[in-house]
Structures are given as C-alpha cells and as structure tokens.
Image 1 (cartoon, one colour):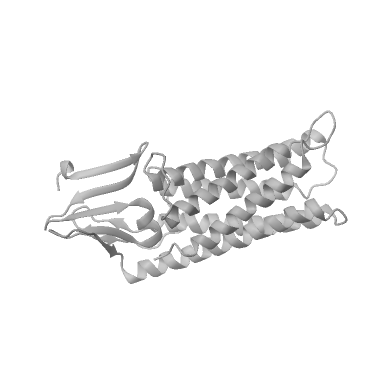
Image 2 (image 1 turned 90 degrees about the vertical axis):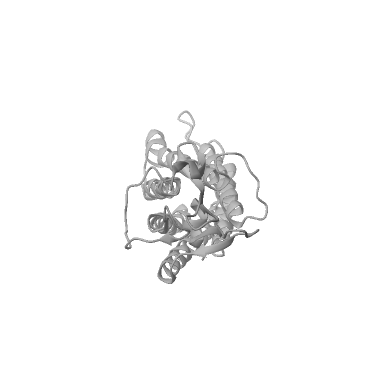
Length: 280
C-alpha cells in the first residue's frame, strides 16, 4: 500500500485516526480510542454507503472487556471513597482526621488499580493490519514502553499520577509535621498528582477529538474524558486550597479543599460508571 493512499489525522505528533484504501477496494478507518476500548475499526466495502464495524477476535474482545471492567469498577469505587472521605472531613468534625485519611488511602489503592488496568488495556489494544481491514493482537503483556502512542502516554501519565497521589496519601498519616514538611511531603505530591491527571486528561481529549476542540454529545467516550477532566480540574482547585500558609499554619481554604475533593471524586465515580458501558 502506498503512503499516498493513507489519510492520517493527528494530535500533535500522535496519529489518532487513519483512513486507508483496501487492496480489494473500499476503505478502512482506524481510530485510537475505538480500537483500544471496543476493539473495532470501521470498514466500508466497495460501493457501500455506510461503514460497518470490523471487530478483533473473540479472545481479544474478552481481554479488553475484562480490563475495562476492572478499570471502570476501580474508578467508581475509588471516586466514591474519596467523596466519602471529603464529606467526613467537611461535615464530621467530631471524627478523627485519621478516619478520612484511611478512607482516602483505600480509595487511592482503587485509583491506582484503575490507572494500571487502563494502561494494560492500552498496551494490549489490537493493532491494525496495514494492507487489510482487520485488527491483530499480540500476546498479552503487563508492560511496554510506547511513548509514541497517545493512548499509551495518556494512560501511563494517569497511572503515574495515581502513584504520586499514593505518596501524598501515605504521608498524610505522619504526625507532628512542621508547616514546611506538610507542604513538602503532603501538599507537593498532591499538586504533582493533580498536574499529571490534568495532562492525562488533555491527552485523552486530544485523542478523541483528533487534536482540535470538539463537542461530541452523542459520543460516550467524549463524555467520559470530559467528566474526568472536570474532576481533574476540581482536584487541582482542592490541592491549591490545601496549601499550608507558613506564617499561620492554616490551609488556604479547608472548605474549598474538601468540596473540591468531594465534587472531583464524584466526577471520577460517574465517569467510572459510564466507562463500564464503553466496552466491546
């Protein structure tokens, strides 16, 4: 197949959608998210008006379905636990702070599991055959290094963000920290984790919108990444408000920090529920 027969759409250096002519006639369209989440590409036979979905093999679809279920369930539970922890911190003044910290930590474990399951799903996404309208799959892998793929990079940054959040959540159990130590050990990892979540969400939006602003009201995938990104923004607002002022030893705004965490976590929980339906 000649390169001139391909039409690639990009988000920066990343190819997010590729259209090419088949040797037997007709066209095939590969989209990064559709292949990764649903194991499909669109094929239009010669003379046909509409395209039909060409699916990967049953074993591949089952693999994607299970990984998606783990990720969706983990983000739903993790988001719900974070929202519960924030609600207790805001309204349960009589409860010890360790209660919220424990709930946050358990929620963080689920977030990390969801982030890793998303990465493994991207690693094992079916690949297109260059001269045919079909998808192929390699043997199952737990890890790969493919920064040239936007889906891999987005999920890897997300997973890294959950690990950094884990540092923040562990350090929150420490007692007797000075104001400087609180900002260095608790607040700084929180900010870095939020930033990584925002970067991951930006890449996910670029993937589904092919590098340009878009609103796809009928696209479940678009709603998932949009709701997740709103949650990431709210987490960042919460992190900024949680900064401990060196001169007073108090947070910028405890209420904003708690409400930002609560509403942001609910966004991730809702997106997790929606993600359960974006499957093969």
